[in-house]
Length: 113
Length: 114
Image (cartoon, rainbow over all chains, first blue to last red; front, side, top):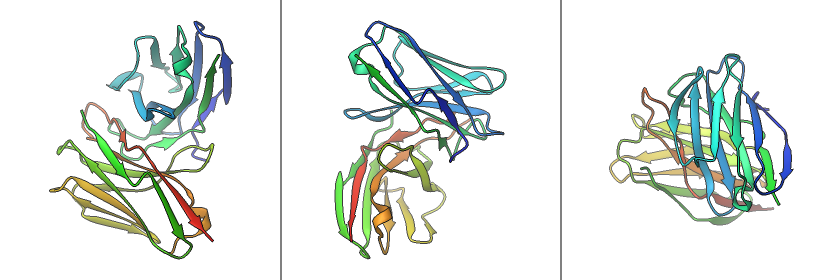
């Protein structure tokens, strides 16, 4: 157990819908990262937040957005869902802004039908 | 941006033998190279990492080597055991003040045969 928690564990929804994935970092960690893992694209970095501010951005679609709240938990919002958005979404956390060791949560499996 | 290539994509070894996985990266500025192990249906777990000011790092049966000139790094697992069977991912990043973005290789599925 890494100490990073994610909810829900599984999510099944229809195309065109919107979902919110939630992540709580390890105690003391200020950075939160979001990754997408799919069979064809592998593990891809989406976005990083540090203490409430966006710090680094990867291949995140415009339909996706994220935020980090004052209590440091983070939410990833996925809208206008498409079949290709079906994937495992992982959250990771690290102590500082510049990361180094990132610890992953158990992931949320999103299935879009 | 950074691009990380990982080889082989699958690796089958006999229990007790060694396993070697190799990765190359494209951005010479990258300075942090972690390795993650992912068992089926589970989260990636950090198993070892190395920074660009170090050429080699060892932790029990696992070692990582880094060649900055050639821009490649490798994971070595000695005396493999069945519980080493998993998918292994290498990654590279440039840790800087603005943040840290890991770029992952495509993964290596390791099967240790008893």
